[in-house]
Length: 122
Image (cartoon, rainbow, N blue to C red; front, side, top):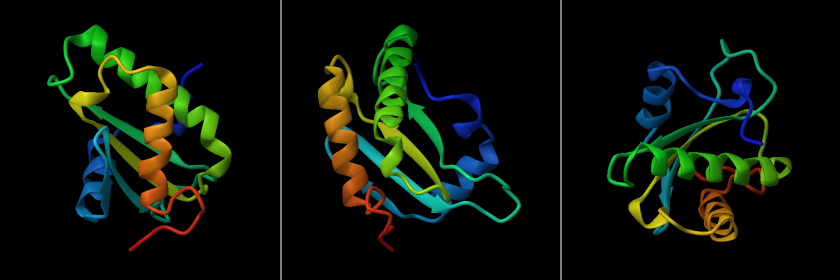
């Protein structure tokens, strides 16, 4: 199904704002950056930005990974607080993994960050 357009971070300035907070958590498959949404962003839901580098592979492989991450977010969206901007950076090990493994590892790194239970770590 994929993550719908309103749930995506697309602007470079939004990515830079989340990266500037330097709040990151990682495992072997993903690096997660998160920040609360600024007041001028008037939305009542979480937003996600995806970064999949050329180290993952060719364009079709990168799109494949993005789709798997988006589908994982759709499956776990009930556990994510509504006021967060989240940037996911995929690491090369994620290439070719099954959907179940991608979702489990994404949940693991989001849990490390304290995002899944609604208590973001500082």
